[in-house]
Length: 328
Picture 1 (cartoon, rainbow, N blue to C red):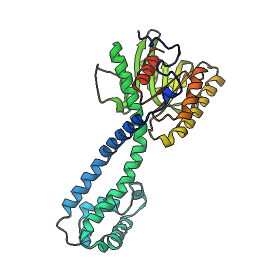
Picture 2: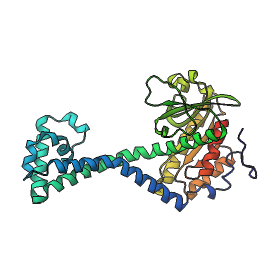
Picture 3: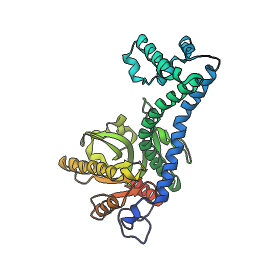
Picture 4: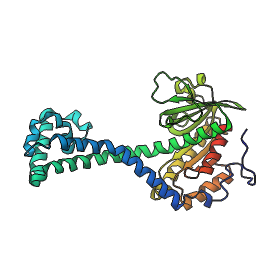
């Protein structure tokens, strides 16, 4: 069985020795931004490929009016016109055609021979907003995936068997994770394993009836049958630990993320206490941890308000957190 590192009597995380040890360093912030930039390029690449395909398809045209006689590029032009996928549900074919004609008259024709480039730029501009929206959702997902990878690594090192459930599996079929198995982190909805105390289920992004809110990290005393397609959340007596995960790396949003996360953790403790379960453990993991919030987190750890915490960008703290959670 895993044992915490000696030399630190902290009951939470032996790599958290002070408030300062929680703070995200400049190097960690830089690495986080670079990781997000790479992911953004990956998300945006299909749109760039679409733009190149469009240019090839219209290279034979002599004026933007020719676009109106090419129904195969209509979806591209509708996007370049500024129309979102959602807006299409409210517009008739005539409305859509009018939008394309306005694009041609007001924006493409004035550019002269550069009308193909202009249409391409406008398409990419609109899709850039879509990439931004996707990335706002993806940043949170990236944080969860990093946590899951750390859990898998900790289990592999300790020889702990783990079953996993895909969030897309409507049949709720549990699968055994192979040692070193990669590229399933983005699919995971829940994990199952056994420790010395019994079966454990770790589920992500579950709406907890006791709290009446969504919770990022949810650890339960449960086997795969008792998980019952997620209905385990209706059994507060089985809850062991609930936690907040904030994967955003931008220091400008750090304090706000902690404020939101801390409010959620207070709500969890208060709700479970009011329901007759005051012993619920809570934890916080954040990628961007600034000085002021680091002090608050450290104080809560020492006062045993928070059961554990970790900086998502600190490998040692994250592994220690995972080992602690695996053995709860």
